[in-house]
Length: 129
Ligand SMILES: [Zn+2]
Image 1 (tube, rainbow, N blue to C red):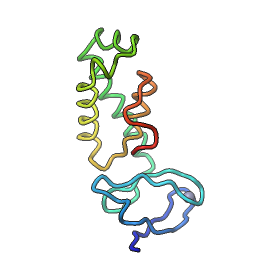
Image 2 (tube, rainbow, N blue to C red):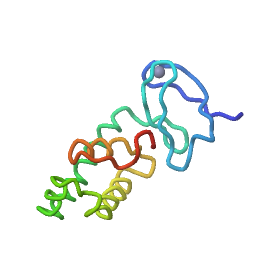
Image 3 (cartoon, protein in one colour):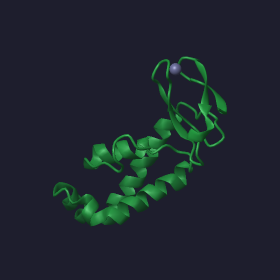
Image 4 (spheres, helix red, strand yellow):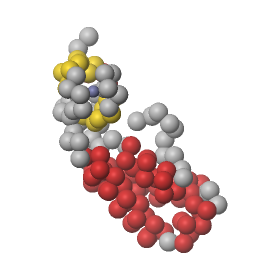
């Protein structure tokens, strides 16, 4: 089995990430030693710890823009829990925009969390990344 040497940014544990887990979009890793989650890009480089906060801020901006564009119609859809039914394509466009600005290696977590807190919806089934 081939693997890419990785070092956990939190506890310093070293291990091999199976290259089969590393797609073009990189990977989201949970350290087997300390359970810290961190992202690696497609080359296997660990992303800076601050990257998650930056991604969250970016998700906020993209969803602010979506709300500004769609206006009261979007707010009504959220209230009536019809967000994906009524605005699915717009949500996916916001997701594409997030990936365009954050870089294709950006993990989806920040966008998912912002979507959940703001609108109470899940972009992807739990556990998918
Ligand atoms: Zn660790």
